[in-house]
Image (cartoon, rainbow, N blue to C red; front, side, top):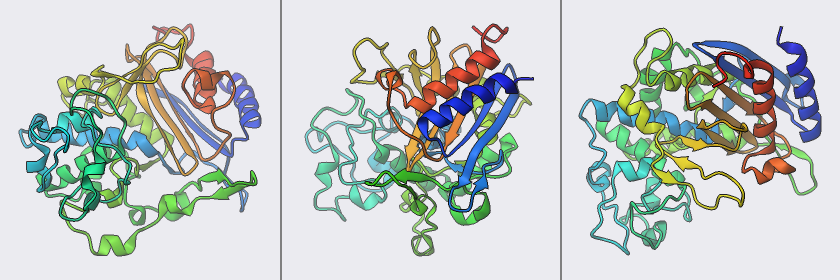
Length: 378
């Protein structure tokens, strides 16, 4: 009954933005009321996208890492105000402020003063014993005073999770977040997944031709064969490596909307921890003129510019051509998931609103057709 208006809107969006494949899911109340897929998961072989195909969801993955860390904090295994140095096994200090302790709280909220200038796929980058230029990993401001989005924050959290739980990062998340939520398929480890389910990701080259990005699903077999527990977690990319389908991510979103508890009563986090993730700890800088300020909590932001008149909570992702969105209204009565494997990025008036064009247009199409005017529209 929803399809006519949505299909028309999505058809126009896909044509305008040269979208290769698009998957969505919509939550209203306690239910996933809509899911659908359009376009292709593989252009070269003309394979259509289906609802159960897996996307690399990029930076939305951070929310899984934050959820896992908070689970351990609730059990008393991690103090969010502890010294990260004690948790990772080597000194983690900003050389400009060596007296200031860097904490998991700072990593979670992107206020640690770390940066990604030297990359983020190995703890060797941050470790003074393995990188003579370790000091370049830090910005010249006091830790805890400013927001700076940094992938190394979350790869460091993944390392902490392993050292504390003594469970390999990818296995912990599957066992303690995905499986309890009834998500039977997904995860960080490529070789644990059926390769035929992985959606090919595309980026345009210098000639404007779409090119597949196989590195998004690199198995990294040699790295995993030489895996060092409590140090090698960045191999799985706690900052961006989760693979899920839209319905699976919608189930995770339902848990966040339920303040840590799923619609069928499975408790993943306490309400207190869930609210911490959804808090407004620090303002995100560089907001374009005329836009509302946006704020960051723990792997989730608050924003008022995606849907007019609505405060939305969530996260976006972008890597190797994938663009992903998980967001819900602050009253937690409805939410949307959007995933695409390649499209024209950032153009038109949507760019000025601070969102990828595909996020803005698809989210608003789903809102107009499925949410607006219903009891959930608050």
